[in-house]
Length: 149
Image (tube, rainbow, N blue to C red; front, top):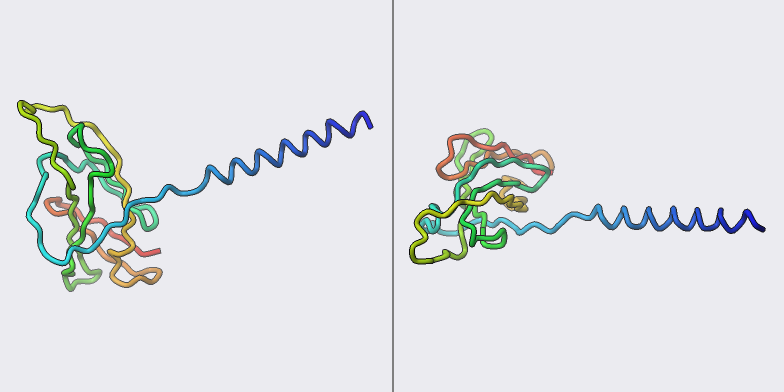
């Protein structure tokens, strides 16, 4: 009886650790990127600079240096409805700012680095596994190959 209680406590403690690990492994929700139906004017392009971009699964991770008043929720990722007819096809994408922070005398502000994550499943050429398309950031020299998963 004296040895039963420590064994029982040990097994109950192991069960609670497993539950907490499963809860921590859930993915954070990413804002959905969308296809723009018409061409829009460039707003806020001088407020940020794209440093790098890479794709993991169906998510695009973009590292930007942005104005300190801009948060992660202030950015939208849009893709052109037009696709170039090449193999694989090419879609132009653009990072937009929803709001423009205005402050007088704010000419030389230090830009802060931020990581933005977007769900880009709508940018796929066909939404079936293995479908490939190049994503071209407007103004960038290199394209990113996106394979739908």
